[in-house]
Amino acid sequence: MTRQALFEQIKKKESFLCVGLDTDIKKIPQHLLSSEDPIFEFNKQIIDATYQNAVAYKPNTAFYEAQGAKGWESLQKTLEYIPDDIFTIADAKRADIGNTSSMYARAFFENMHFDSVTVAPYMGSDSVKPFLDFEGKWAIILAATSNPGGLDFQNLPVSEKNEKLYERVIRKSSEWGTSDNIMYVVGATRPEALKEIRKLVPDHFLLIPGVGAQGGDLNAVCQNGMNKHCGLLVNSSRGIIYTDSSENFTSSAGKAAQEIQLEMAHILQRL
Amino acid sequence: MTRQALFEQIKKKESFLCVGLDTDIKKIPQHLLSSEDPIFEFNKQIIDATYQNAVAYKPNTAFYEAQGAKGWESLQKTLEYIPDDIFTIADAKRADIGNTSSMYARAFFENMHFDSVTVAPYMGSDSVKPFLDFEGKWAIILAATSNPGGLDFQNLPVSEKNEKLYERVIRKSSEWGTSDNIMYVVGATRPEALKEIRKLVPDHFLLIPGVGAQGGDLNAVCQNGMNKHCGLLVNSSRGIIYTDSSENFTSSAGKAAQEIQLEMAHILQRL
Image (spheres, rainbow over the protein chains, first blue to last red):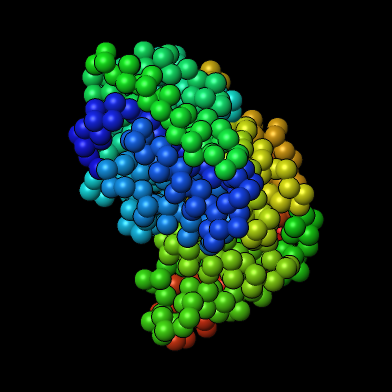
C-alpha cells in the first residue's frame, strides 16, 4: 500500500488506529478453544468487530511462533482474511546479514503479503535495505521503543553534538530509503523523543505503540508527532483485544476501537 | 546444555565448529526436491555427514520462515533429529518488549528445545532478560556483527572515554546474566573488536560467524578470542553445506567440516 493510499484510508475512516493482534492462546475466551483454529477464529472475530474503525492490523509474530507450525498457519490465514484496504504490519523485529534479511523479506512480503515488517537497526544498512527492495512494501525501523529497556542504549549520546543513538539511527537510515518505504517505531511513552524525531523526519509515518496498557497518552502523541498527512499509526493491542474474556468479547473490542476512533476523528479535524 | 558440558564436547571432538543450517530450497541438490520434506532431508544428511566434527548446529530461522508453516515443520524435525550432545542455536535475532520476548523464549526453548537463541540488543534489558529465565538455556547477544553494516552503529563512541556501542552493549548486558547463560556474537571479520571484547568478558563463550564465505580467518580469531576453556564457537554455513550440489554433497560437506576440525584440533593443543 502506498503512502497516499494509506492517507486516503485514514481520511475515509477518520482513524489512524492500528490494532495489535498479539493473540495469546492463554488469553482468548474459553469458548473459542474448541474451534479448529482458535487463534485464527479469535482474530477473525476481532477483525470483524474493529475493521470499520481501524486502518491497520499488526500481528506480533512471537505469539504465532509460540504455537509452532500451526501458529504460522493461523498467521497466514489471518493475513488472507484481512481486507485489502487495510495496511498490514508484521511486527517481527527482524534483521540479519544481507542475504538472510532478503529471506525474511520474501517470507513476509511474498509468501504472506504483508505491507510492512518491523526491523531492528543494530546490524546496519545491509540488514535493512533488503526490505526496501519490494515495490509498495515498507520497513518500519525501531527507533525509540516504548519499553523501559529502550533507554539502555537508544538514548546514549553518539557524537560530540550529543546526538542520541536513536536520532543517529533515524538520520542514517532515512538515507537508505524514502518516506514512501520507511516508517519508524516511536513509543507513545516517549513524547519528548517524538518531538525531536518529527524534526528529523517531517514526512515519514511513525508507528506508535504504547498507548493504553503501556501508559502512553494519545493527545500528547498527536501534539508532538502529527504532520499534515497525519503521519501516525497508533497501535493498541491489549486495550482492544483483551477487554473482555466472555462470549461477548467482540462487542467490547468493537466498542474499545470505536472509542479510540472517535478521539482520533476529533484530533484529525485539526489537519 | 551447561558451559561445562559444552567444553567437554569440545575436548572430546577436538572441535569448536558450529555448522550453520542456512538451508535454502533454491540451493540444495536437485535430487532432494522430490522427497517429502527436502529441507529436512538435506539437513538430516548434512548432520549425518558433519556430526563427528561439530559441537553445534545453528539453523537460521529466516530460511525456514521463507517456507511458511511447512518451513517451521522442517525446523522442528531438524531439531528433533540433532543428537542431545550437540549444542543448538536458533539464529533468530529476536527481541521485543518483555511479555513478547517471553513468548519468543517459549517458542524456541520450550516448544523446540533449542539450547540458545541469538538476541538483538537494541531494545535493552527487558527485551533480553526473558531469555535468561530458562535453566540451562542461553541468550547469544549480538555485539559486533560480521556484516558491512555492522559498522554503521555498533562502533559509534557512546561515552567520553570513547567506549564503543558494542562495548557498552557487552558491559551492560553482562550484568543481566552470567557466563553460564549469555554468549556474544562477534564477527570473524572484526579481529580488533574480538581482542577488546575478550578483555571485557574473559569467561564468556563467543559465537563467531564470518569464517569462510564472509572472509574471516580462523587463526586470527583464535589468537584474539580464545580463552582457557576455548570460549569460542566458530560457525561455517555456506563453506560446508553448499560445497557441492551433486548427489555426493554429503561427502563434500563432511570433508569440509573435517578440514576445519583438523585445524581446530591443532589450535586446541595450545590450551
